[in-house]
Length: 386
Image (cartoon, rainbow, N blue to C red; front, top):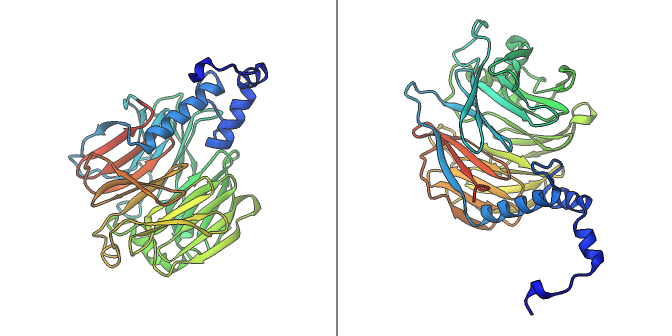
């Protein structure tokens, strides 16, 4: 008998209409706490369909920007359900509407700010919050933090004034609705900076994660061709992971920067490959081996090989390996293109059909993957369009 001819008990029919049930399933299965559709059932169906598309390489591809004629290079990308944000080395930040890909606004840091080094205003981090009000926060290498409201196109205010001499270079910046987190290099004992995102007040300074790379931190103000020095990512609410080429650190944001775990990396880490999502962190080492670790224990969950050694070459800045991850998938960009693995098992899935050249930066969320390559511009893959 076909399935649609079976009788379904009235209890199950009643339960299946429960918005609380579908909301709980969205939270448990997809870690989704906000619905973008009128009902939680519709949201669950959308997420399930998007995940199936992601696993089977069903997506719509588009090029949002061509390569820049004036050698403009993208430094950071951030994605939400409805927007893509791109930050560039000249201090500009571009906001795109998704899925259309239309450029909505361009934001810039204070052009009259005193500079120390050619790239002091290069964008070093982007936080995009969709709720309760859409808000964009971005940082530059000189330590400045700017906040832009999407209600007023192009309107920017400086929330924090950086101090290079006191703190060093702001090499990476991340956060959420509760915290802003900056990872600095250049001044010993001041690696981590934590702000209360609501009050915008600095609440913690300390840590030695980047102390051994202090000199390289200063070099970033004048030379962006070197490998990335450090990366920080929110792994779960209240927990942040920081990584340098030699070590990884887990910090408790709710407990004044307490270090929860620390691990030396004997085979190094390609810092551009570090990303975190859903209590997991991934990194590619010098052998081309990717390890996905649980946070905060840093115990290995799975591993897979990208098939490309980067030792030596990566130190000279001649090989680019970029990576990002979402709730279930790891996306690695290298000379072979863009490839996707299952981040829970380490199983290889597929390669993107498009060849974009060497990616400079990449980002992913549940629906989208975006990457910038200096030779070909800004690219977007939409797994929810089909």
